[in-house]
Image (cartoon, rainbow, N blue to C red; front, side, top):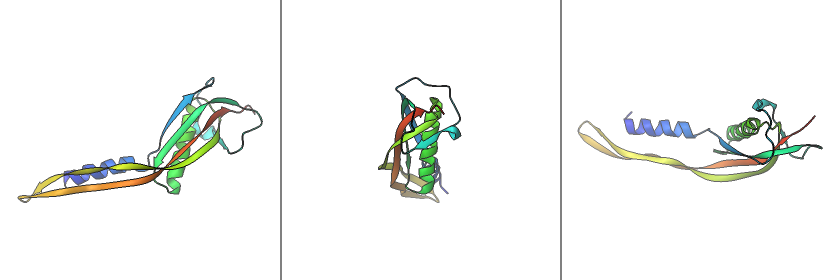
Length: 134
């Protein structure tokens, strides 16, 4: 396998299945907790404190992509001490996976072309990071 294709495939493997996320603190953060302690809510609990806003996105539309984006959302909430997320919107989006092209030389010949060029639909998820006092 030539180096151009290997580099392109390595880059693709790193980008697929990787969710990224951010958080904005709008209230008082609490001590960091484990992401497994964060509960998702469709309907707000009876009593809660808003800590911030969390966002996550991932390329792809499969169930594993949704699982990745939910785990990233929980990680973002846990980082600011939120033990709950009131889910906001789920937005399908389009993300470019990139293009790697180049020239490979071998056997006295030059090969031109693209290793891959792909656009994928992804998932964006957001919500309010909250602290629920049980």
